Length: 345
Image (tube, rainbow, N blue to C red):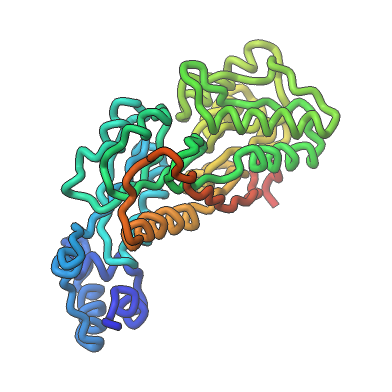
């Protein structure tokens, strides 16, 4: 077996991404780091010839990752994890931004980059099962997120209902009884939002607490501004909660800003839990308790599933009658407790 990027990274004591940057002669590498990696390359005799390696197999050596929001830190962090895992397998990742629009998702899934990529990892929002049934592109496809298609494509997700219940259970355990949900999408049906709302209702009901619609604050999006607007609407309505479970961390950050402006202390007056565990959750004035999906696991499952499809005797030919559905791969999550529910210790 030849020397890999992983072998070089191990000897140099750096990340695989750093080795890849040196091998590809990226400019943003310090001279000292470049010399360190080059020394490991020379010692191991590593010879990067990825193009020839992939061409011998009839491949390009490129995978595509298509996400709805590149500006969302969750997807940016997930993309970084996918790139790192792909590099372990000597693959480069091409990023596509669909904006969560069905037309763009169809375009990507139908293989408009068919001659460029070997496989596709897609996180769809609006794509329908019928859109995929007509797929003729033979590159392996892996789906991320909560949309279920019952088609022969591997699907990777977390259990959103269980994750939401875990968040609400934490708040109930702190003695909170008026727990609001921020992030019920108003302009489109969104599977994750529905599942998280369902988990919120189920956990409150199981604890013998009310889950009134009056404590569900709708949003038109899931950014900081949406969270701020939803929190202000809830407070202006006179239905002040003693805790908030937000659809994601960005919504939670926006909500905490409004709570501060209104003179309400987090967590003493209102405790807040987010979802995604983005970097911003760890560095705010009040650090954010959040549900942390295992992004590294999601990335590894996705990349290895796509590469597994390439190694199969036949490429993924698309749905045909009688074809069994793909695998449902569930990644783990955990609750990370921080100041927004526990206060400073």
